[in-house]
Image 1 (cartoon, rainbow, N blue to C red):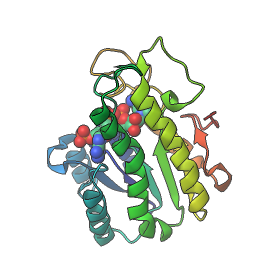
Image 2: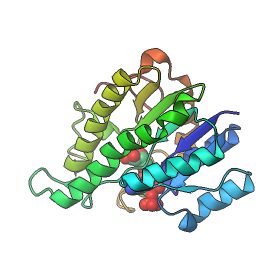
Image 3: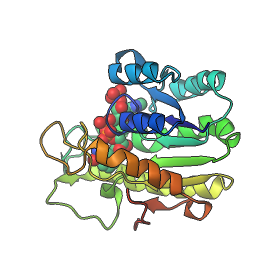
Image 4: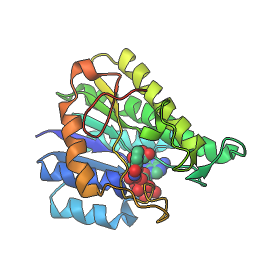
Length: 238
Ligand code: NDP
């Protein structure tokens, strides 16, 4: 049985991935900031005999390394690590370049960029014991340098963090060349972040997204390491 570890599993894409991987017969190590209050996650895991969720705040190194210790007590290895947890700027989708809030931007970069770096570092020993040795950083089309979507809003902090994450993916892949490490963008999905708190209507539901995302992750091969892929598995321009 393959094992997948997912960050930010309490809701949205993370929770959708948990449900899809459970359906596909994986052992799922779900992590989130506060397992006690993540009721949908809690019932999904209990009903399917999966391990209980582990507390993991990707913006705290203490929390990350403590979680890695906890996880090593319940599994011997991890095949796929999905760095999904992410946040948008507080003014998303109205975050122009002039007037960025430094504190808020640091929160976004700490979560979206440093989070995946430190989570990968902490779980590397378990990943190296797995057969697949795959790390997926959930990126965004808003992080593509060629993406100009002013009609959708302004995303200075968030887009910058996802562009930085794509570069982090490259460096992780160069350094950890026994692993397959790629960025994948999930499409525009109707989640709390995707619908910007109910202000807009994204075209994809989690039911559209989850099977495709799992399929694209499944298809990632050694030669794909360091690159950036769409929901459908096509190589994207950085
Ligand atoms: P949601 O806002 O619906 O969910 C975000 C998840 O991340 C929640 O589970 C949240 O946990 C968790 N999270 C936030 N901060 C932390 C933290 N410090 N530590 C651990 N978990 C944390 O967003 P989505 O599900 O839409 O987004 C998931 C990923 O997909 C993100 O990386 C996002 O950037 C990316 N993405 C989303 C798109 C979309 O259209 N929805 C498009 C492109 C990319 P909690 O419940 O504790 O707040």
